[in-house]
Image (cartoon, rainbow, N blue to C red):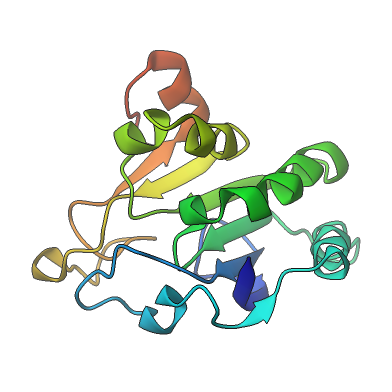
Length: 167
């Protein structure tokens, strides 16, 4: 897995002050994608254990409150093997940090695939659905097009259907 970008102290991609990790590789190729450079799985720099350790340290800094990690792409659910270790460590080593993930897959598509479902179980918020240029809306919070949903993952999994995040 390659990392396209890593932004510390991000306030755009999710609620609160967070860090944002952009994975490389996406087969959706949405027309009008804001991050088309990340479609290439070889774009960016290789994911390493040292990088993972740095993310954990960054989430645990004590001089400012970090809400959690946002994982975007590319397509995170096409990088499951590379991300599973990280999300497991965050849940074990980073007290009170949430994980937000953006995906071109819908909640229903993710839960139908066992490997993708495993990654989802470690996440707290899912912004799902492909970006559709014709449904683009710049007034939406945390998403780019009208079809995309901001979902409470734990509630969605427990109810077996997509449940919007109460804000």
